[in-house]
Length: 198
Image (cartoon, rainbow, N blue to C red; front, side, top):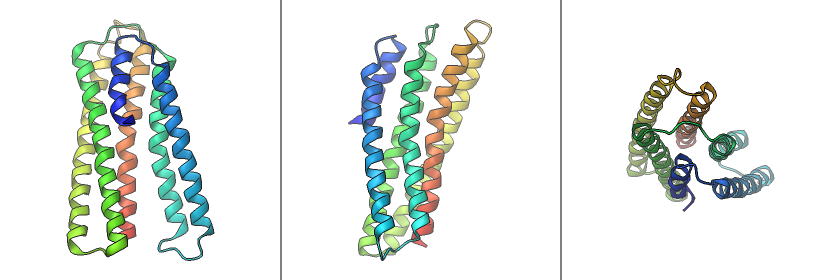
């Protein structure tokens, strides 16, 4: 699975191994996501009857697309610069934890979409609405955890600014920022889903 392979991607990066194939794989999935996005847009624009406002749906698709774009930008940024210093185990662990939590938040969001589709098809009964609320709470907790992790990593990285190349420091922190933006996009999507339901 693509999301799981990102862990191998990071491991290869930290070990200064070749990561071009991972970047190509990410770009392949981004193009695939773009194709699905464009197909959805055409369907929405051509549909005579639709349960939600077209503009709301198009914005929803745009925000989802931002998530895949963030992953592609992350992969390309990794490829552009190999940091000159050896990343210590503490930072590697925190960075891997950050990536794990981001990937987990995407999986949780996917379960929310599946629940929403069930509700759309069969009616938004109270148990389904309660389930959606629980998922939102879980996603909010993950977003907070990811924000905290990204700040912790940033503080540690910038504490090395006197010892390492400043460009490498900023580069690494930009990787962290890109990852931490993904849960923010998910949060906007959950707000949209709540609007659709209510």
